[in-house]
Amino acid sequence: MSKRVILVWFRNDLRTHDNEVLHAAIEKAGFVIPVYIFDPRYYQLNKSGYANTGELRSLYILNTVRSLKEKLQALGGDLMTFAGLPEEIIPHLVHKYDVDEVYHHREIARTETSISERVEEALWKIQRNLKHFIGHTLYHKEDLPFPIKDIPNSFNIFKKKIERESSVRNPLPDIDSITVPPHLEKTEFPEHGDIDHYSYGEKAAINQLNMIFSRPLGNEDLYIKLSPFLAIGSLSPVYTYHYISERITESNKKQVAKIIERLLWRDYYRFMLKKYPNKYFLSQSTADSDTVKIENWKTGNTENPTINSYMQELNNTGIISYIQREILALFFTYEYQQPWLQGAAWFEEKLIDYAPATNYGFWAHIAGEGTSEKDNKSIKEWEKEKASL
Image 1 (cartoon, rainbow, N blue to C red):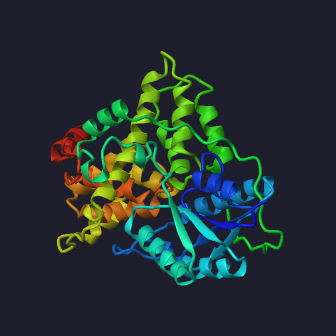
Image 2: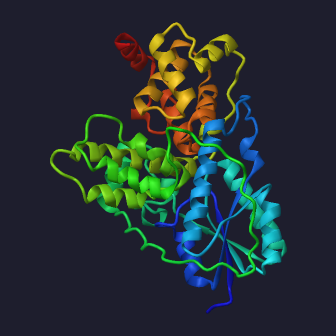
Image 3: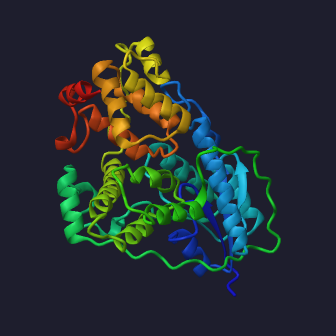
């Protein structure tokens, strides 16, 4: 057995299936140390004064981490959990357990990349390497038919070229065991509650896929049933794609196509954020914002009962359909004429399936400032929706 020790730093990849980081670590090392760190920077207030991570998503993350810990224990391993700064905790663990290398999935949003850079710098000082993997998208970056800087801004062109000229990789085989150092410390797991109407972790994610395809598919938004698992990484987009592609029938092909298109939008937003790192996060003047209107929208106390119903559902459950999100965002942007970044920041706090690229990319398109000009919205879209409400 190899004597190498590799630390696997989990973030938004909370699964054992189709996880390249975990696979590579098990293959290259004799001992693997899985670690998850609750970073306080994700639980602070953002520039808009809202929580970066609201109560419902905090519980969702906590329970998903717990589920991963239980899965790793069932495979013979464990998950060390800490609260603090990764750039301080990881070097300490490297020294304590004589770790040879640290593996993690690369993120793309500013906060995440900044934290990775701090960890990388801290490890460099003690002559250790932080190895980056790419594993959050349906299509692997290395398989794209164009470099990031040349990715088409048009979603339709992006979709056509990628489907014609690339292919989705096969999911990695399941992991059957993991070996941690025999002297690995047992860490305390934070106290936590449950969100009554949600299940957590990769077992629940796979069960959700099975449940969706165990009955005739209606017209409901099926992607929303999967998006919390995809956002936190307890469900692999590659696994999802192959699972649903193998179950296409004449009766469900339209619904399957919708799920795949949402997976492609998810890829598109991530690649666009990589291409234009600051586009979705540029400071926006709040001089013309109306705090009363914003508060009424946030709390579901507008003059529009449909808007109120959708917002109350979001606030109470942390999840609503994309149609509902679009209507809430159109109302905020065009009826109330408020700065769209304020609305996006509220969604960031409330959505349990929040992901930086998807959320801010979506809002930019609603506000007519997205990268795919054909998909940008305007007041005309709001007038159409308003007439039907």
